[in-house]
Length: 267
Ligand SMILES: Cc1ncc(COP(=O)(O)O)c(C=O)c1O
Image (cartoon, rainbow, N blue to C red):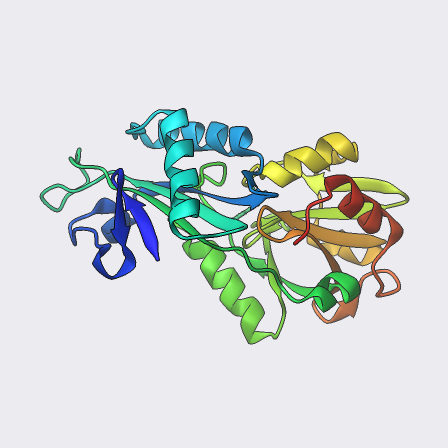
């Protein structure tokens, strides 16, 4: 398998970055995870827009044009003989003399791997989630500093759940550890409005399902009729259990099914 490292195909065994790289030392990097859908990069424009905005906040200069990055991605998909791919682009600040100052030689890495999905059964029966109190600083920026999400997800695994919902210090649900969250109450789709990564799939759902962005408190969870999560690589996944309690009747609800149809991306 190959990667594209700083514009060149490199075999995985030889694909290395300097130990002084800020991405490795400090999580000083931005990234995007994408997927193909019938061979095309799904929502590439949206992902690239977010990549530009993350890089801007971090003061990082993207070393290639949008079209060049698209070419690198397509070239890598072909080089790795992939039909459908999970793609990641990562840009780090580069290296310097071990401080937080300006750095040289940014690392730009493109990955393209086989796209895999959670088992079908989880889409049919729904997943379980837990709540976890933690906040992500600069949540709008897709940075590689994902420690709060990692801790939340590890807590979920410890509780034998599939996802963790992050809850801020005021008891508001913000997002999943690696997804956005949606709730259905009296036929209306609701989603948290602040302190979250504005997911590309979330944006689509807000438009298609006219989801309302609002404050959702952890204590309101018991009142929800349906819950689902969204992300590029998993699409829409129903959540039928939270903190060990059934959501609604514990089955995948009709609105979740309808939204899944609108979005229409599966394996
Ligand atoms: C913290 C977080 N929120 C939301 C998402 C969903 O974003 P998208 O729909 O662009 O995949 C992700 C995806 O990885 C994420 O890591």
